Amino acid sequence: MGKEIQGIVMEINPRSCIIMTREGEFHKVPRPAHKVMVGEEIKTQLPLSSRSKWIRLSSIAAAAMIIMLVGWYFYRTAMPVAVAHVSLDINPSIELSVDQNSCVIDGIGYNEEGKLLLVSVPVIGKNVYTAIADLIAVAIQQHYLDPNKENVVFTTIVQAEPAVAVNAVPVVEEDLVFQAIISSVETVNIPVEVMITKADPKLQQQAKQTGVSTGRFLLYQDALKDEPNLKDTDLKTRSLKDLKIKQWSDKYRNQIKGNRNVNLRNWSNKNKNEFDQDKTGANNGSGKKQSKEPNKEKEIKSNSGQAKTANEKNKKDDKDRDNRDKNNKDKNDRDNNDRDKQDRDKGEKNKGDRDNNDQDKKKKDSNDPEKVRVNIQARLIR
Picture 1 (cartoon, rainbow, N blue to C red):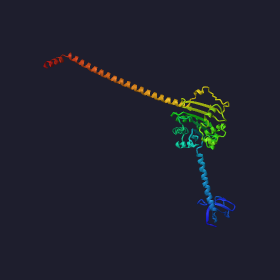
Picture 2 (cartoon, rainbow, N blue to C red):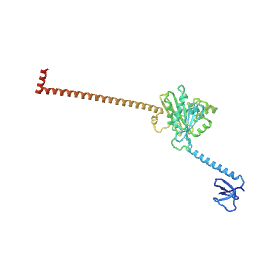
Picture 3 (cartoon, rainbow, N blue to C red):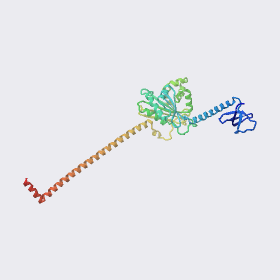
Picture 4 (spheres, helix red, strand yellow):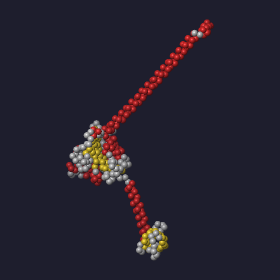
């Protein structure tokens, strides 16, 4: 037997019991001959065995494991969850993950150009629309969008499954994505066609497993019909033009494929800022566009038109401000002229009053005999 120890009984077994000492150590000791109860403090001899040491180490390991699990749980609950994904395909191919607050929580470059663009433009923590505008602006600076070639910005929006999406309102709206893109494009003389469409989460997962953006994978699926031997490597290296994006957009203007909503928006500042918006509803089995309001199409304005209207409004405001300043200046000049005229009139009136007073005084002196006599004497003396 070893040294005597004292501790509280934590567990009772047929031939042994486990006690905890005041130092927090657990020991397995022989069960006393007398009756003991859990919670009772006893004195006993520590057996010469490494078992108690193993129990102590295992208890420490268990406590450490509990701490790690609790920490991991709180970390997972605090981590932002992606509820939407936005892919941008120019030549750089990029996909952004967005949380419920419309903030970017992750960005992936699916080719070398996309990775370099993300290095040039930090997007984590930014509002998704700000991030998109910044990416397009730098893409222009790096000549991925060039006035000497046909430019296409193909954007795909993936909303999360209802179980993940916490709000009924989409965290990424197509109109705002479109505005973010053209806000950077309209300041330069570069013709650009912007296409925006939606995809489902399953397609996004398939694209991720293939190693391409959702937009490219969408084109790839359609291109396979015409080119069954098309390889994944071709998908990653081919340009959007080679993937027949023009034919794809024309095809999907007037028909539906599966349950996917297609919303293509084409804009080019080369064509007088014209904007065509084609919407195909998922439930429109005939493939024709439907509109509950006959004149609604007339009321739809292009985002480029909105931008132009905003510029015209700013110019009008500047012109109105200039006119107000000019009117105020003219009014001040008129007021100053009126004051000068009043001062002149007042001066002339005062002078006339003084002249009249002098004449009245002379007339009065000429009528005074005493003053006449004094004047005559003064002249005689001279």
